[in-house]
Image (cartoon, rainbow, N blue to C red; front, side, top):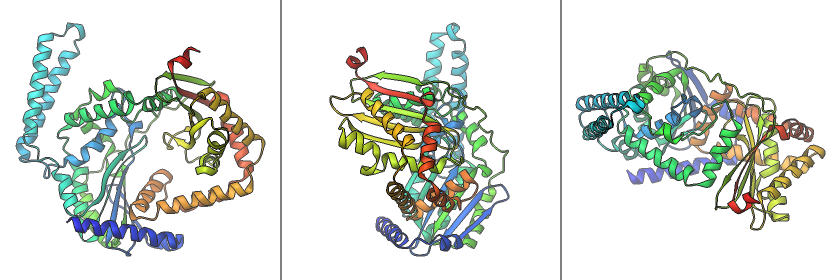
Amino acid sequence: MHSQRRVLVGVLVLGAATLLRAFDWTELEKRVTEFTLANGMHFIVLERHEAPVVSFHAYVDAGSVNDPSGKTGLAHMFEHMIGKGTTDLGSLNWAEEQRALEEVERAYDALELEKRKGRRADPQKLEALRKALEQAIERANRYVDPNKYVQVIEQNGAVGFNATTGADATQYFYSLPSNRLELWFLLQSEWFRQPVFREFYKERDVVREERRMRVESDPRGKLYEVLLATAFLAHPYRTIVGWASDIENLRAADAAWFHRTYYVPSNITVAIVGDVDPKEIRKLAERYFGRLEPGPPPPTVITEEPPQEGERRVAIESESQPVLMIAYKRPDQRHPDDPVLDVLDGVLSMGRTGLLYQELVRDRRIALAAGSSATFPSGKFPNTFLIYAVPNLGHSTAENEQAIYQILARLEREPVAEETLSRVKRNIRASIIRSLASNAGLAMRLAWYHVNYGDWRMMFRGLELIDRVSAEDIQRVVKQYFRPSQRTVAFLVQAKEAAQ
């Protein structure tokens, strides 16, 4: 099986090289088939017969932005649950395990009930209930067949088995030899239909440790989190991993509710790219995913961020390397100015030709690194345009901040040179085409554009919109969005500098 995986990796690379040599949008469009099952699940299928490989990308339109209040980190838990399996795969005895898992939740209910008494809670009873919960979890774990779900996938030659949670979505993906096509339909449909949240509390502890390492012990991770919390006072564009106290109190019952609410077929899009027959794909989709019960449309995010009426500043004292982050409010990704902001991002930070690198790092040497991101933390809702800098030794965040403002003022005052604009557009186009070179990259893009724009063809249209961006457009958006009242400034500063 390992040799099979090596062959799969090789053909994926070969396919990527072929696509880059001659990317034909018209030909690609001819090879795409779309259909929607009766339960609402949407499929996009792209035939590419260059190699016996197929890539799968399941896009669930729910991310951390959908976490309920007091349950931050819940969407992210599913990323850790995908490998735990189903009722049929991952259990030594499902009937017994099911009873044991139900006992775990009853023990947790009893503990929660006593904890709600607050100061009136009996300390001895609380301790006894905690021990009872630990024992119930231990009994349930006896029925677990560890990593069985993942083992079956990898033993069949899978490459790139993974999942990722973002602010707006959760995505599941991997590639298989095309003669293992049906395995994906069987396993993924079963997990979507009846996931088992086994070892949930063990994984909850893993996530808590993840937060400790990536946020609490990492000053930059902490700055990232504080910047979001300061920039967004109302809208739930906050931490993806979750707040510590929320993580520590997440329940398997919470995950079951989230699954029932957001993992309904109409909220899932599947893109399949590779050596496939669309007719066969449709038959398999009907057979396996057609079993999923339809559900009501998930609740939408109704909280809107109120207009920002002044600059916000937040500092974190740390003995680590100083860092500066500036986030300007901007509209969502469907706004007509989105491609203009993408081009501006390229002008500012596209490699060594970007203005931030040239001026802050190369010429003035006041920064070790500097860059930007047109969409932060995600784009489904109004978000921010992020600019950052890491000061060089002997230089401050304040010095870098003023240098950034000078660059923005010049971009508003003077049009970007046509040569620069053309180079940025070429680089954006090349970057997008490179991302489509592999089956996996193409599947991800097809699903993403369908969900976020209602039509996967927008990835073609998006390049046309990029080409239309003018120097005057750049000047206009800088003037419109990069105002002092619309920015949030966050920085890591050493205690000595803070005192000054």
